[in-house]
Image (cartoon, rainbow over all chains, first blue to last red; front, side):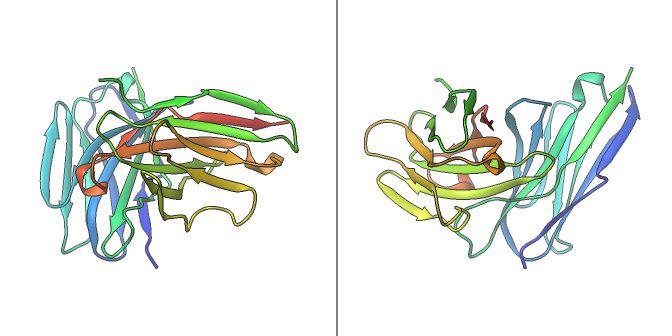
Length: 110
Length: 114
């Protein structure tokens, strides 16, 4: 079964803290995506990965294909980072559709 | 270059009415995906379309739901005879040549059935 598991489900941090959100998946993928969704808002694509590591500003995404695991890191977290972060994958041999994790709700307090 | 445009942003329908949700992909994008987010649940795939073709509709409910992406104009997700359980956020995403090139998501249409 093609599954995506995220942890933690909820995360509360103080401003300035280093944040890590984890994502595991069950079978081979063609790509993994990290998405951001603010309450009542649209979805923003942060990263698309098939190997290695990507960095954009204070955000870093890594993927380990052998271990079927990805992490999203936020350095020097800020209250505006408060959002739901969603991991999604397109599985090999699939039709291009994304399968989503349940999301991690991040709250960064000032 | 406008992003993925979805309209309306909010839609209220009475039970039994029809809902039409529109999605205009980014310029140059010929692949459109529809996803649904039920309250307190994660996002779920509904349908994947290319111009004039449905590629994968494995996530579409068997009845009342249909989707199209005509040669000209936006992609349409149509829900006939809406029920309360159809209340959800519906997101459209587009891609230039398939998912490996990345997606751009729209802001979503929030459907409320009363």
